[in-house]
Amino acid sequence: MREVSFIKQNKEKWLSFENAIFNNDFENPDELATQYIHVINDLAYAQTYYPKSKVVTYLNQLAAKAFQKIYKTKREDTNRIIGFWKTEIPLICYQYRKYIYIAFIIFFAFTFVGVISAANDGEFVRSILGDHYVNMSLENIEAGDPVAVYKSGSNWGSFIGITINNLKVGIIAFVMGVFLGIGTLYIMFKNCIMLGSFQYFFYEKNVFWESVRGIWIHGAMEIFAIVIEAAAGLILGASILFPATHTRYTSFKIGAKTGVKILISTFPFTFAAGFLEGFITRYSNVMPHWLSVFIILSTLSLITYYYLIYPIKIQKQITQIDQ
Image (tube, rainbow, N blue to C red):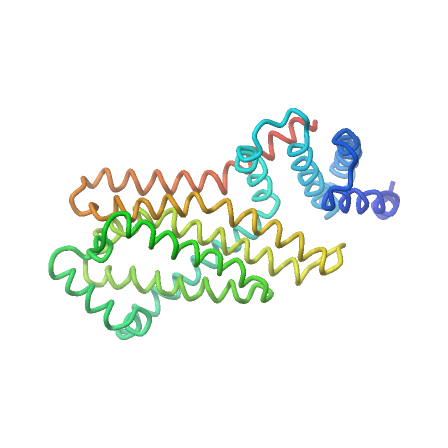
């Protein structure tokens, strides 16, 4: 069968199934499972005869959405909260992985701009961070503690204040995606420029390693989470710009719902980063170097695994089950 005929023959069935999934328009999980099998069969057919076609990508995404719905509605479902982080979020991250990759590319690009700008303009750091912050950092460097700013205040006070601020930044990065993603890009640009120039400032003052120990103990998860939240904002913006087969309003609702789920999934990491900054970072200059490196690599590995590697494993498991 020609691809055009295949699509024409099954298009209405696929669209009806997709709308039913989104609107929960099924009387029971068994009906959903039956329709799911039909989609899987169509996917297998398309993979065999049209392996490079976009219809394969579409059916693969549709099958992933259906699996999520089946997982959530099956009678033997045990714990909704565990399922949310164990299966639902990884599948969403796999389905929208290109937005996560794009968010990281943008993050590195904007951060690099910050580094280059600081390296070529002696006043750039002051224009970004402010005279007060720069002068305070210079005093801390002279005193032998470049990141003393992270040691001010009480443990609990720092933890609560920092966590609330990071949650606010993440939520704003997501919500600003409603402006066609441009708002999210602006938030990323502002924060990445600040990060790049900030790190170059310490490099220029020959205390780069000390700054890494003081910043990235909590920053690995904190900054990674913000990038994921920015990806959620880009998804929201793309849902408005590229509605595909949906109406723009329906596409927006799907994008908003998906983005909110991704945003919520970052909260535990944001809380963990706040805890590290409030209770651990302040001791970075007295703890052994190996312990600093261990904490940084462990936290970075954990969040990297969850958002970049674990989703691929879950998707492979689903594919094996379907086959």
